[in-house]
Amino acid sequence: MSQYLLLLHGSNGTSTDMSPEQLQHMLQRYAAWAGALHQQGRLRGGEKLCDAGGRGLRAERGEIVVDGPFVETKETIGGYFVVEAADYAAAIEIARGCPALLDGGSVELREIEPM
Image (cartoon, rainbow, N blue to C red; front, side, top):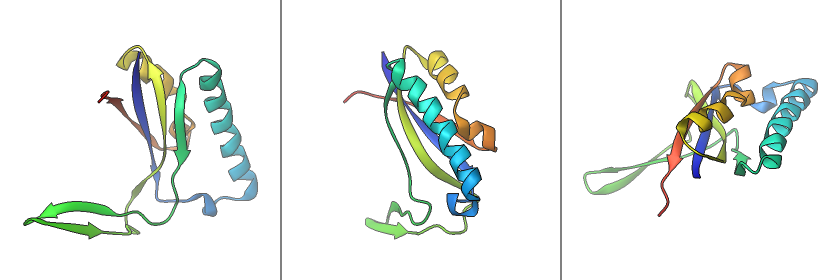
């Protein structure tokens, strides 16, 4: 079995933009989805990322340049999950159930290469 990283991309809105009822509903959907993956033995981890902040590092002329926080982005990475699946096809089936897809977001799926 391989492990896959699901990066959850969403709109620039944050959980602080939601009403308490909307936030509770969203959290329940994620809890149900992650709970089912855990019961199946597929969930290896995952966390929500902070709404604000973030930094980008890149090499430029031999120096490390730090950018951010990025407040003008149109899309944010709101969180991630690590799941176990036999192959990409199975990982895609797992990702199809991700609540991020119900809210107009997207999921980036990457296989984790064992080191």
